[in-house]
Image (cartoon, rainbow, N blue to C red):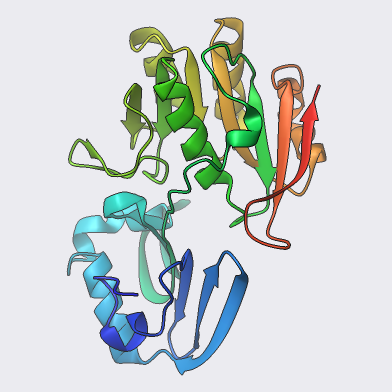
Length: 273
C-alpha cells in the first residue's frame, strides 16, 4: 500500500486495507487490518523513522509544537498520527516533545452500510452510545451513522476535534459524512457543544470519544435542548457508562458494544433501554 508519508521500504510491506501502523525506532513494524494485528520481521531503521517523522511534521517540529503536546498530529483525509517521546516541562505544563520514539498512524476507512443494523431512516429518534476498546471500529461506525442520518434529511453537526470522523482539510470534507452535515473541526469539545447548539440548529450531534466533565455537560445540554446525540466511549461493555459518565445513563436509549473478535467492528451487544 502506497502511503505518501512512509518510505517505500515500509509502505511496500503494507496491505491495502491497513487501518493502523506502528513504527518504533529499531522496533518491528506492526500493523492492523480487519483481521487483526500482524507483527512483521522488518526492523524500522533510524532513516525510515526520520523520513516518516519529517513527512508527518512537514519538516518542521517547531511549527507543530502545540499539536505535538496534545499527543497527536491530524493529517489530510482524517489520518491521525499519535506521538510518543520525552515531554519537556515548564512548571506543570508540557512545553514540547523531544526524542520522539514511536509513531502510531491511524488511517480511516469508509465502510458504507456498516450501520445498516440501526435501521436509520427519516424518523430515527434515538440517542446512541457506541462502546469499545480502541481500534474496534467505533469511528467507522459513527461516520456511517452521520452519512445516513444526513442523507435522510436530518441536520447533523459533527464535533470532530481531531479530524478523524470527516477528514476536514482546508475547509473541504474528505470522507463521506452525508450532504447535510456540518463539521466543527479542531474546536475543544467545551466550545464545540456551545457553538453547535447556539448557531447550527442540529437535529443530531455526532461526537467521538466522550471524555471528562466537559463532554458530560455538553451531552446533557444537548439532551435537555431536544437534540439527539450519537457518541462513542472507550470501554469493554455497557458498564463504561457508569462512574464519571453515570449522569449520561438517562440520555442514551441504545448502546452498541463493538469488539475486534472475530474481526474489527463486530457488534457483540446491541441494547435498547
